[in-house]
Image (cartoon, rainbow, N blue to C red):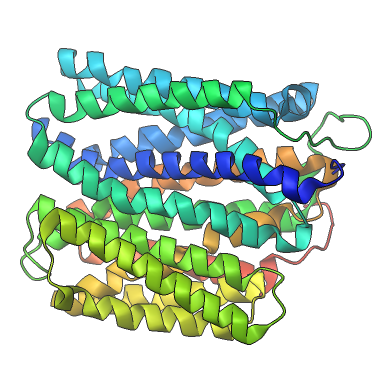
Length: 461
């Protein structure tokens, strides 16, 4: 990538603005976890039917990415033609349109219209993902791309942390009837429009690929990319499945017997774990040479983000501090995993996948608080997976970077299909046993961190 001189200072404002987009789509996406039980109750849906929310939203990622990939194969990469900035603006406009459709959906009171609205928002987020992720990755040295993307994803996780708290209050307590979703999603629409205007007037640093823009499917020649988009499929599918069914899991008498509003606190802690791990990961995977200073800064970031999570939950529900103490033990294990990973992206990815797998097994075998915290704690180890898989998969693609990014975003399809599969499993075998579905996902992610990431640069046969 050709980059303008003096990029480090000039790129900071652009990095801040794009990171704000990460926060916003994280906040919106996790609102689905609160929206699911709300719509499930209103329309009297089964677990499988309620998971159509995630199918519609994340299915849009697949449809939009396939469309993008076909255009790039036939006419050349669209991002190289319209630019990252215009791609992000178009994505925000689509998201604003989809959010606005919640208004007629509440008036007509039809489930299919909610699903259509979420599908359109998902299409907008496709463009945001295709443009924002690689844009952050190229805003500096390739060696520290994982660090920058983890930092942006950290703010994405801040959005996913406070999303269930605010969403739980708005949907289950503050607003009544149709206003429970109508007003919040109209606000979303307005915010998306304002951000689109901000991007329009701000002058972003321009990045261009050297040489001519080629047609075809050149990105598919790279083995590590192909294995990477399978890893993205399994990661997103596992993460979304766990978050989507968590409220139902915590409502079980043999787990916690919580109300939906109480359970939403723990959904926030689950997503908050991603924030803790991503901010720590941004430091761990940076180019910092002083090990003591690095671990010291990681510890400070962990303490600060934990305090933010607990204060947010306390302000919403008054949760006693002793209730969250088991989470501190899981944070300690997460910190040890970073140390063992030695700031190597693929090694850290493999270790985190194995720990997440172990927690799933504990959650399946046990009941009560042990199962509760085992499942909630998985968020800590999901933290660096997207960033590490994404940057490992697009490394060395050159002029095929945007096309490769579209393939990776296409595999967010996992967030549409695997929650359906887990929901169906829960209907037939119970919510507790349904966590068998993510087990296979983390096994594959561990393989990708072990061997699948290697850049052999051979055509896929």
